[in-house]
Amino acid sequence: MLWPRTICRWAAVPRILAMMTRPRSVPLQSQRAASGDAGDPAAAAAAASPSAHAEPHDYSLPNSSWTERTMALYRAYLARTPEGGGSGWTRLPSYNRTILHEAEYRARPRKPRPERLLTRNTEVVGAGFEYAAFHSGAERRTVCIFQPGPLLEGFPGFVHGGALAALIDGIAGTCARNVAGMIMTANLNIDYRSPVPLGSTVLLDACVTEVDGKKVYTTCRVLAHDESAVHTDCTALFIVVDEVKIRHLKEIFLRNEERQKA
Image (cartoon, rainbow, N blue to C red; front, side, top):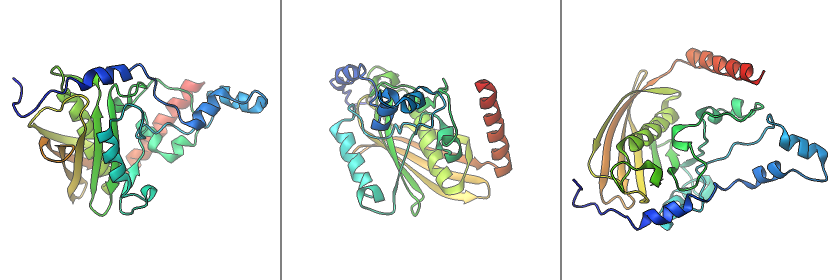
């Protein structure tokens, strides 16, 4: 049964499917590294090396699949950050592996790996999760602009509830981590109120409501682009992970990476 207030935007789907044939744009730095310099053997050798120190691609930057509505919201929130001339908010970069958010790991030589963050698991623009997030420390709040692609379909024309839950978990967790440090999800309670059409633009609005020892309580709502309707309500509980355990887990991870390089 379809919700009577929600109109399936079938017209947007063919346009997004056409965009799926376009590869994700590569930053200029990466293009140069990939092509090398025919007159510079050292540059060519560095480009061919699998352990070159290449800056990872930030998937939260605009690409050709983003609609005008998505771009308008992105510009509005970017204007609140130092990048856009504002203050109080920060644009959060997004990589295809969680570990790449660690500056220590980004500085290490890396070989290509098959592992991917669930919400960044395709290089095809517009096909899956297209989103950008912004955080306000003063408000303990994270806002995410989300444009779902056709690979996230559940009921025909709409986003799968599990796909939406994955992004809610990620954004609410990002908010909790920015407030309290490294966390893990303990509980996620979601009320689905109306479905999200594929190709639409929605806002995820997450906020830390309470920190009680190691427990971090958050809320997250999925709203229409103009905040006129609520698609989803969520409450979540995250647990702060002990710093000693974090270091231990990182050491195990890095040792495993070194073994795989050998």
